[in-house]
Image (cartoon, rainbow, N blue to C red):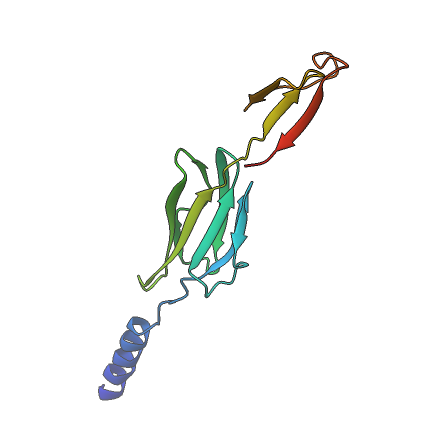
Length: 146
């Protein structure tokens, strides 16, 4: 009888002692329409992201099928020059790893265009659509980047 109780206790204790996974890593992180530095490494948690687009798409997945992610598979509208996006990976044992994306929108530099006629009259224009149809033959166009 004592042997049966010991066997039952061993089974009950061993069932309760199963270790839960502590794997809270991402297996991959991809961002469309942007550059990410440094290159993705599951142990690296801080990244710089640069884009000239108005929106980016983030896709990622946890390394463990037992972990849950928050912040993956998102499309972010870039409404300011910079923003921070976090991705949290929660392991089965409830430990959390946070990946931080510092997103910066690159400024698009628009050149100034100096239009000069044969009479040396100058006009500076910050935005202009140039085509062969709008530039007369006696005009020289010079781009100046600022």
